[in-house]
Image 1 (cartoon, rainbow, N blue to C red):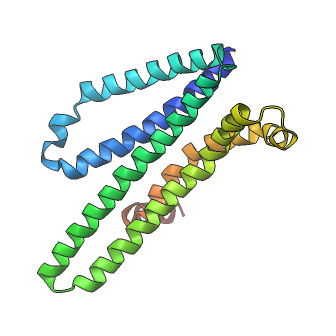
Image 2 (cartoon, helix red, strand yellow):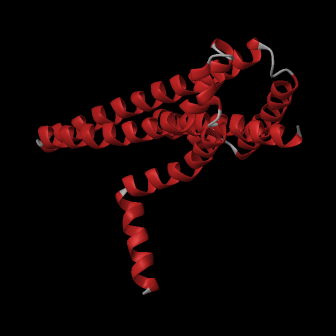
Image 3 (cartoon, one colour):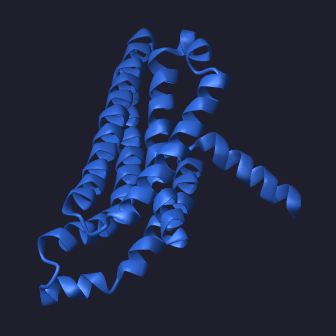
Length: 200
Protein backbone atom coordinates (compact mmCIF):
# COMPACT_ATOMS: atom_id res chain seq x y z
CA UNK A 1 0.00 0.00 0.00
CA UNK A 2 2.84 2.39 0.78
CA UNK A 3 4.42 1.72 -2.62
CA UNK A 4 1.07 2.22 -4.33
CA UNK A 5 0.58 5.54 -2.53
CA UNK A 6 4.07 6.67 -3.60
CA UNK A 7 3.48 5.67 -7.24
CA UNK A 8 0.04 7.24 -7.38
CA UNK A 9 1.24 10.36 -5.56
CA UNK A 10 4.13 10.84 -7.97
CA UNK A 11 1.76 10.49 -10.93
CA UNK A 12 -0.73 13.03 -9.57
CA UNK A 13 2.08 15.44 -8.67
CA UNK A 14 3.60 15.06 -12.16
CA UNK A 15 0.29 16.05 -13.74
CA UNK A 16 -0.03 18.98 -11.33
CA UNK A 17 3.50 20.19 -12.02
CA UNK A 18 2.97 19.98 -15.80
CA UNK A 19 -0.09 22.18 -15.33
CA UNK A 20 1.83 24.51 -13.01
CA UNK A 21 4.63 24.86 -15.59
CA UNK A 22 2.04 25.81 -18.24
CA UNK A 23 0.53 28.42 -15.89
CA UNK A 24 4.00 29.79 -15.07
CA UNK A 25 4.82 30.21 -18.77
CA UNK A 26 1.47 31.81 -19.39
CA UNK A 27 2.07 34.37 -16.63
CA UNK A 28 5.62 35.04 -17.91
CA UNK A 29 4.25 35.87 -21.38
CA UNK A 30 1.02 37.74 -20.63
CA UNK A 31 2.18 39.46 -17.45
CA UNK A 32 5.88 39.82 -18.21
CA UNK A 33 6.34 43.16 -16.41
CA UNK A 34 4.62 41.89 -13.26
CA UNK A 35 5.99 38.34 -13.39
CA UNK A 36 8.47 38.71 -10.51
CA UNK A 37 5.84 40.32 -8.30
CA UNK A 38 3.28 37.59 -9.11
CA UNK A 39 5.58 34.54 -9.02
CA UNK A 40 7.56 35.16 -5.85
CA UNK A 41 9.74 32.63 -4.06
CA UNK A 42 7.32 32.23 -1.09
CA UNK A 43 4.38 31.70 -3.45
CA UNK A 44 6.32 29.16 -5.49
CA UNK A 45 7.27 27.33 -2.30
CA UNK A 46 3.65 27.27 -1.11
CA UNK A 47 2.49 26.04 -4.50
CA UNK A 48 5.04 23.20 -4.51
CA UNK A 49 4.13 22.22 -0.94
CA UNK A 50 0.41 22.33 -1.77
CA UNK A 51 0.89 20.15 -4.85
CA UNK A 52 2.84 17.52 -2.92
CA UNK A 53 0.41 17.56 0.02
CA UNK A 54 -2.59 17.32 -2.29
CA UNK A 55 -0.95 14.53 -4.28
CA UNK A 56 -0.17 12.45 -1.19
CA UNK A 57 -3.66 12.99 0.22
CA UNK A 58 -5.46 12.17 -3.03
CA UNK A 59 -3.30 9.12 -3.69
CA UNK A 60 -3.94 7.85 -0.15
CA UNK A 61 -7.69 8.21 -0.69
CA UNK A 62 -7.36 6.54 -4.09
CA UNK A 63 -5.56 3.50 -2.67
CA UNK A 64 -8.00 3.28 0.27
CA UNK A 65 -11.12 3.53 -1.92
CA UNK A 66 -9.84 2.26 -5.28
CA UNK A 67 -12.82 -0.08 -5.67
CA UNK A 68 -15.24 2.87 -5.78
CA UNK A 69 -16.18 3.98 -9.30
CA UNK A 70 -16.29 7.65 -8.27
CA UNK A 71 -12.59 7.61 -7.34
CA UNK A 72 -11.54 6.17 -10.71
CA UNK A 73 -13.75 8.62 -12.58
CA UNK A 74 -12.30 11.43 -10.49
CA UNK A 75 -8.75 10.53 -11.56
CA UNK A 76 -9.75 10.28 -15.21
CA UNK A 77 -11.55 13.64 -14.97
CA UNK A 78 -8.44 15.15 -13.39
CA UNK A 79 -6.32 13.93 -16.31
CA UNK A 80 -8.79 15.40 -18.85
CA UNK A 81 -8.85 18.70 -16.93
CA UNK A 82 -5.03 18.94 -16.92
CA UNK A 83 -4.91 18.13 -20.63
CA UNK A 84 -7.53 20.80 -21.37
CA UNK A 85 -5.70 23.36 -19.20
CA UNK A 86 -2.38 22.73 -20.93
CA UNK A 87 -3.92 22.77 -24.42
CA UNK A 88 -5.80 26.04 -23.83
CA UNK A 89 -2.83 27.84 -22.28
CA UNK A 90 -0.26 26.66 -24.84
CA UNK A 91 -2.56 27.40 -27.81
CA UNK A 92 -3.22 30.89 -26.42
CA UNK A 93 0.53 31.45 -25.94
CA UNK A 94 1.19 30.25 -29.50
CA UNK A 95 -1.46 32.62 -30.86
CA UNK A 96 0.03 35.55 -28.94
CA UNK A 97 3.57 34.69 -30.10
CA UNK A 98 2.45 34.55 -33.73
CA UNK A 99 0.54 37.81 -33.35
CA UNK A 100 3.64 39.44 -31.91
CA UNK A 101 5.75 37.98 -34.73
CA UNK A 102 3.38 39.39 -37.35
CA UNK A 103 3.55 42.81 -35.69
CA UNK A 104 7.35 42.77 -35.79
CA UNK A 105 7.25 41.54 -39.40
CA UNK A 106 5.03 44.44 -40.43
CA UNK A 107 7.53 46.85 -38.91
CA UNK A 108 10.31 45.29 -40.97
CA UNK A 109 8.11 44.69 -44.03
CA UNK A 110 8.79 40.94 -44.00
CA UNK A 111 5.40 39.81 -42.80
CA UNK A 112 4.93 36.59 -44.78
CA UNK A 113 8.16 34.68 -43.92
CA UNK A 114 8.01 35.54 -40.22
CA UNK A 115 4.36 34.59 -39.86
CA UNK A 116 4.86 31.28 -41.62
CA UNK A 117 7.97 30.39 -39.63
CA UNK A 118 6.36 31.30 -36.33
CA UNK A 119 3.22 29.30 -37.08
CA UNK A 120 5.03 26.18 -38.29
CA UNK A 121 7.65 26.05 -35.55
CA UNK A 122 5.24 26.89 -32.74
CA UNK A 123 2.59 24.47 -33.99
CA UNK A 124 5.18 21.70 -34.37
CA UNK A 125 6.47 22.19 -30.83
CA UNK A 126 2.93 22.30 -29.44
CA UNK A 127 1.94 19.18 -31.37
CA UNK A 128 5.00 17.27 -30.16
CA UNK A 129 4.50 18.41 -26.56
CA UNK A 130 0.81 17.51 -26.31
CA UNK A 131 1.25 14.42 -28.49
CA UNK A 132 3.93 12.96 -26.22
CA UNK A 133 1.81 13.87 -23.19
CA UNK A 134 -1.16 11.95 -24.62
CA UNK A 135 0.99 9.03 -25.74
CA UNK A 136 2.54 8.63 -22.29
CA UNK A 137 -0.47 9.31 -20.07
CA UNK A 138 -3.55 8.24 -22.05
CA UNK A 139 -2.94 4.44 -21.87
CA UNK A 140 -2.94 4.45 -18.05
CA UNK A 141 -6.11 6.50 -17.85
CA UNK A 142 -7.67 4.31 -20.54
CA UNK A 143 -6.86 1.43 -18.20
CA UNK A 144 -8.70 3.20 -15.35
CA UNK A 145 -11.67 3.91 -17.62
CA UNK A 146 -11.91 0.26 -18.66
CA UNK A 147 -11.79 -0.81 -15.01
CA UNK A 148 -15.02 1.18 -14.61
CA UNK A 149 -16.67 0.30 -17.94
CA UNK A 150 -15.84 -3.37 -18.49
CA UNK A 151 -13.97 -4.94 -15.56
CA UNK A 152 -14.94 -8.52 -16.52
CA UNK A 153 -14.75 -8.34 -20.33
CA UNK A 154 -12.00 -10.54 -21.89
CA UNK A 155 -10.85 -7.78 -24.26
CA UNK A 156 -10.47 -5.35 -21.38
CA UNK A 157 -8.59 -8.05 -19.49
CA UNK A 158 -5.89 -7.97 -22.19
CA UNK A 159 -5.44 -4.26 -21.52
CA UNK A 160 -5.24 -4.80 -17.77
CA UNK A 161 -2.23 -7.10 -18.22
CA UNK A 162 -0.16 -4.16 -19.53
CA UNK A 163 -0.57 -1.87 -16.53
CA UNK A 164 3.18 -1.99 -15.76
CA UNK A 165 3.93 -0.84 -19.32
CA UNK A 166 1.48 2.03 -18.89
CA UNK A 167 3.21 3.07 -15.67
CA UNK A 168 6.59 2.95 -17.45
CA UNK A 169 5.22 5.26 -20.16
CA UNK A 170 4.11 7.74 -17.48
CA UNK A 171 7.64 7.74 -16.06
CA UNK A 172 9.08 8.19 -19.57
CA UNK A 173 7.12 11.42 -19.98
CA UNK A 174 9.20 13.03 -17.25
CA UNK A 175 12.33 12.05 -19.17
CA UNK A 176 11.13 13.03 -22.65
CA UNK A 177 9.67 16.48 -21.86
CA UNK A 178 13.04 18.15 -21.08
CA UNK A 179 14.47 16.67 -24.29
CA UNK A 180 11.61 18.15 -26.31
CA UNK A 181 12.28 21.62 -24.93
CA UNK A 182 16.01 21.22 -25.38
CA UNK A 183 16.00 20.09 -28.99
CA UNK A 184 13.24 22.50 -30.08
CA UNK A 185 15.24 25.45 -28.74
CA UNK A 186 18.03 26.75 -30.99
CA UNK A 187 19.83 28.30 -28.02
CA UNK A 188 19.83 25.05 -26.03
CA UNK A 189 20.97 23.06 -29.07
CA UNK A 190 23.83 25.48 -29.60
CA UNK A 191 24.84 25.23 -25.94
CA UNK A 192 24.74 21.43 -26.07
CA UNK A 193 26.86 21.46 -29.23
CA UNK A 194 29.44 23.71 -27.58
CA UNK A 195 29.60 21.44 -24.52
CA UNK A 196 30.11 18.35 -26.67
CA UNK A 197 32.81 20.06 -28.74
CA UNK A 198 34.66 21.18 -25.62
CA UNK A 199 34.53 17.67 -24.19
CA UNK A 200 36.38 16.36 -27.25
